[in-house]
Length: 514
Image (cartoon, rainbow, N blue to C red; front, side):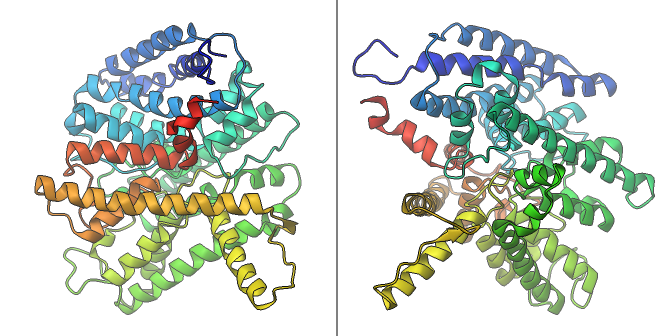
């Protein structure tokens, strides 16, 4: 431990492991480098980034004290990793000097949005004329690397992290522990990443296969890979300015299916792969997850089909009222994209009536399953909250009754229930404060931002969702915000990805003292 008797965190060990992670991730830029060479683009941004990551990682590794990765060191490692990796991830944008992300703050926003799989963007114009294919592929890759969790990947690869691996992984997604599928946490991490990579490959084959069958004429291999890399991590970045709207209905239905898969607990797919498919059907959270998306999608479908969910005079928008397949596809697609926090758009829902937009805003607070790549509060916590409220009502009426909260047939202890309520309350409190902060800052700089736009910007970044409504709608960007607001939202994305408590713990004074 540190020599100072007042300090109880061995930050040297944490920084040393951050160095090891950066060294390993220095291989990641080689993929967009290959893309650059294939398309005859400049490979220097990726080669330089790889060298900087390797050099910085080597330097930080030397700070390792040889101490064990304890509970406190694990918290610090998680917080620092999710700051360091996005910070270094800005280098390709800055070196390439293309478009709005050539600005340091914009580059940091885009990189943090990528690695945290938020999907909010500050690219003023998304096109191959404005940005090279290799830079846009790097943008896609950042989301794929962050989807299953950088530290889950590191535990799977680095033998040094295998000892404190369970602690590190659980602190990367606190409140919902990683289910130990195998006797060793390292093997569990490998199994999850193999499933994740396998499903990504399947998405590439399906997307490109539709093109080969003539059902998706503009879904070339580049787009198939690019969108697979951001579907499975529920990220939502797209190299197309109009997101998934740029593709045929067949592609949109295919993307919808893979978004549902991406928002499902990956442990359930592992059980299915080892001959236990009933675990998927019997899982209480999975059933609630499907019912939630069906409910949101069904409500939106009714609003769109009847025309009630559209603005009175939408400009340049395909008609929907009375078109059953179109209404159903747009409604279910956007419901799934928002609940799973993927953030893709099959049409510009800024053209929808406020009634439909409010439904989407409420859906932003739901989230996908625990153990998935989805963000926000997550369905399992809402299930626990609902059961806790039901129990309190029952016990109030029947004071002598003993009625434990059960999940999957097992009792949930009061400590876990209390933890769920604390996280949900902290999430809602930070969201509310952030909406006010963004709105007040818009007044300071003269940005015409409505209250609902401030609310949607706050939940879109804190919940790692991506698009909001109005100025931050699916076909717009976060570029108009001030530098201060962008940096604030970078913090929100960081806090949201680590599910709040890990960050609050590291920032609390008591963490650094006995």
